[in-house]
Structure formats: C-alpha cells, structure tokens
Image (cartoon, rainbow, N blue to C red; front, side, top):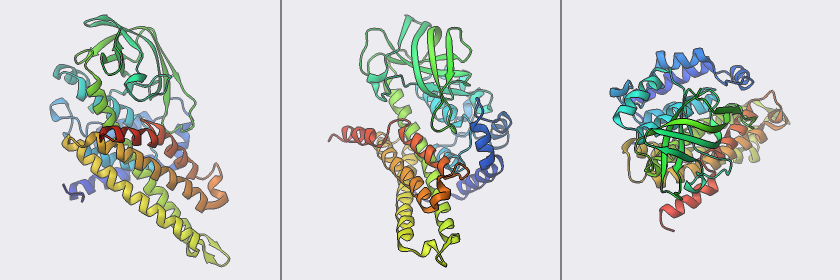
Length: 376
C-alpha cells in the first residue's frame, strides 16, 4: 500500500478543484441552498460530460471509467472542500454502491449506465423515523412475492430523496427481525402512492426528504431477503466516502484559520503570533492530518475490498467526525465576532460538519460499532 498519490491522481485533484472553484463559489452555494432542488442541472450535466465524475468508479462494462474508491475519495474530498450543492453523494456513493453490491448483472446493466451518464439521479432510502442506523431500525415491510412487491411505510432523512428519479429502498420481508429478511427494492421517483416532502434541516447544502409509501409498486434488487451483508457493506463504503468529504472541509477551514491569523492584526501584531491562536492552529493541523490518514487508508480498504473495511470504516468515521467538527468550531473562534455572522462562510462549514457527523451514525455510534467488530 502506498499512501502517496500518483501523478494521475494529483492531476485528477487539480482538475476537479479548478472546476469546483469555478462552479461552486460561496455565492452559488448560498443561492442553491435557498432552492428546493438544491443543485444546478447545467453543472450536474457538465460534471458528467466534461469530467465524467458520475461514472468514475462504475465498471467500464456498465458505462463507467473503472476507477477505484481512492479516486472517488479524491473527488469527494474536493467536493467537501467546496461545499458544492449536487446530488453526487446520494447518487454515486449511496445508490450506486447499493446497486453494485446487491444487484444482478442484468440490473446493473439497467441502472448504472444512466447514472454514469448523469441522466439518472438516484438515492438510498434506509433510515426511518426511529433514527437508527442498524438492522433493528428497518421496520418497513415489503408485501407480496416475486416481482410483484408493494411497499408501505415511511423513510426519513433520505438524501436528495425529493429529486431522485430512482430510489433504492431498504425493507424487510414480513415476519422477519434483525438482520434476517432485509432486502433492496427499486422504486421510480414518480411512482403512484409515493409522497416526497423536502425537510427543513440545519444544513441546507445537503438536501434531505421524507418519503411516504402507500402500497407503492417496487422491484426487488438482487435476491430478496438476503440484503443485510450488501447493506452493511454499502453503509461502510458510504462512511468512507463521507470521511473523505469531511477531510476536505476540515482542510479548508484549517487553511482559512491560518490565513486569517496571519492577516488579522490586534494590538499591533498578527493574532497568529499569540500563543493561544498558535495552539489552536497546531491542534487543528494535528487532527486534520490524522483524519487524512484514516480517510485515505479507509479508501484503500474500500478500493481493495479488504477484510479490514468494516473496522477501518467505523474508526475513520468516528475520528473524522470529531476532527471536522472541532476544526470548524475553532475556525469560528479564531475569526472572532465576524465568524459568527451570517455573511461569513465559517458557519456553513460548521453546519456541514455537524450534519456529516450525524449522517450514517455519529462518532459515539461508530466507536460502539468498532468495539463490537473487533470483539471488545
């Protein structure tokens, strides 16, 4: 394993960063936060046509480029740095991973090319009003048998669920409990009996929705009732993805803090010369660099489908969540009064740090999960 990125990977990072700097300045982030859709269709199309970001880690046989989670992690890191408002995480990380982990060859051939081309926006509907991230939280039951399945119930906090044209729903067969009977089902975004309601959340850079299913027709994805292994892997991969996002955001607020400490003069001296500010910046640097190590190693495990992935995913999610949130909070403190104002971008990163910490389970949940996975 090599922790250094290759020349091609560095070029990918440079190209993505330049694109995001042009397409996702702070003014555009704020504009899209106020919209219901939460993204720009033209930019979404450019991402697919010019950079091929939606197809990055999809196999070439299904219209993708065949890269790995290492390259995907680079893209997600840059997206976390820019706070770009797109349905990328829901489509490429959540839904695509679920389809690749659970779907048959025929189903992947049906769904993945549309995602790769940017034509399909997709998401994974997993969490329910109980807010649990484990198997016990899945209470929605799939009625019927074979390909004639209906879903009734409610899914909450579905990322981009209000705009997705393809929804991968996690439900269980009637009469099953725990990890038994869990399966994936695909539902069209305009299916009859489906009601989608955008949620007013703290972090509007990543839109979420409540989905209500009233006897909605669904199609099983893969073998019904045998989906817990695929779901667990999908959630571990998604944790890796959001860790790379958080690393990008943490690196940005670190750089912003250091630059402000150099520029801001108080009592005739840059505030960065004061010991208290020096210590804050030094602590942030240590946490961000350690978070990078955890996220990069997790990306490698995901790329290699390594047996360590479940352990490393939870370890990285716990550490990166704390590191990003602490760095975002310290960024506000270093900026002083201006950091608390709506006009400054510090609070945008603070809110993203908090929402990313909770999404897919917070640090406390993942520490407990890590302890279980290593047998403590």
